[in-house]
Length: 414
Image 1 (cartoon, one colour):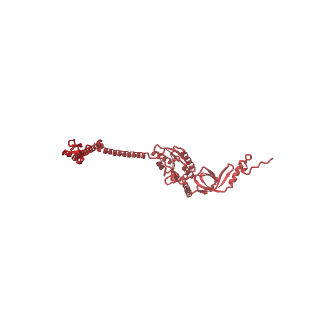
Image 2 (cartoon, helix red, strand yellow):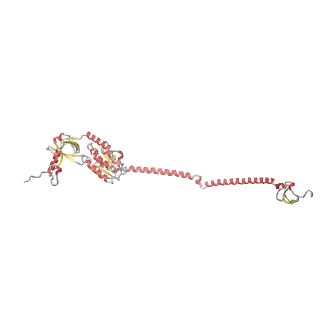
Image 3 (cartoon, one colour):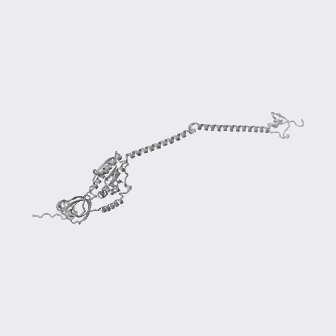
């Protein structure tokens, strides 16, 4: 009888023809996990299960940032010796990882459980706040303005909570036509972060939603701790739609308040800040209408007074007054010019008469009028000397009233 074929020693030596059976794989994993050292791990208690008479209790430890959990076994004596654990509490557990081969599950065998104190949580939140601040998630310039009048408001709140009632009733009291898209989620406990993040993602993808309000009533520091969760803070920072934080009361300041585009001190305050008051808006519109009416009336009255004053001017009362005045000026200038021209003409006539008289007085004709005569040779030369006259020369004698010819005689004949 042949012996069974030996199995591969290492996982890398397995093949399709020579695989490991499930039991061997489970044993290999258990052996590997068993070589791990005990370690400290932090998480959030989701469930505590213990039965009377049993020496072992069971916890479900969940990662607060992602949807992942591990089962933890712990002796009831250790659990009783530690502070009471409530669901949702943050703890650090000193445990040894173990692998249960029959079911193929990983779990932790706890040796010590310590609740994370408020002081330590505050220190961690302050450290996280500094990190997120350095990344610019809280910068003022990245905050988006809220719409003046949102048509639809996305509301993330607890189931049948007073916060939901405060936001919805106060918003509709201020603006009755406003619409809501409501997502009810867990606002306390281990399911808060994944449910709020899922609701935020869903509302952010809805283009009809103009603003998203995340709200819940007041509570203890531990109750509000999920709203300082890093995963939720980064989800809000990635949102495209403006987000309003209305968590707790005015004294409560989870990190959500710093990353949100607007922080409201209470759910009621959120309703007042996301929608305007229709009564105030109507009053403002009426005041604006009155101011516009008064301004227009004053302007019309002013323009009317200016128009009346303009029409009362002489030129507007009688449009021909300016032409008449200019015509009168033109007539006066014309008369003055005519008189001056006539005066100059008369003066010039007098000067001409005076010059004519002078010319006449100096004219040879005037001398001839006094009985003188002018004797000229035949060629027109004036006889100036007796010696220039020849015997029997025909001379022309010009007197005042005509002329005649003469012929001089010699001295012997005379």
